[in-house]
Amino acid sequence: MDLDFKHLKKIKSSWIKHFLYASYFNFIALLIFITGFIHSIIPWVFAFTPYKLAKKIVNETEKQFKSNLKKRN
Image (tube, rainbow, N blue to C red; front, side, top):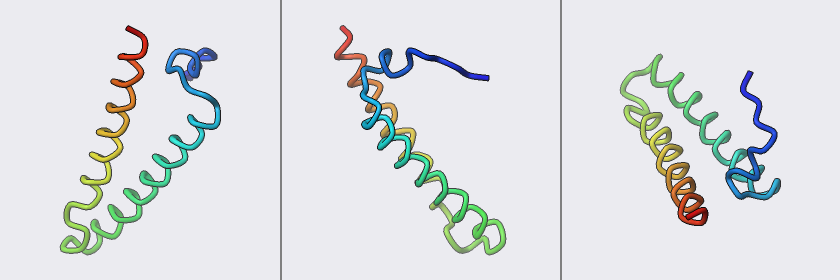
C-alpha cells in the first residue's frame, strides 16, 4: 500500500486543489479506458486517442510537478 500522510504538504497543494486535479485526471483515465476498449474491438476507431489522452495526463502532471519544484527551490 502506498501511504504518504504528508503528500499534500510535500506537493504544496490544498486539499480542494488536489481533489480537483485528481478528479480531472481520473476522468481522463476513464476516457482512456472507454476509447481504448472501443478501439480494441474496432481498431480503426480512436486509433491514437487513448495514447493522446494518456500523454495529456503525463504532460500536465509533469508541468505541475515542475512548478512545485521551482517553488521549493
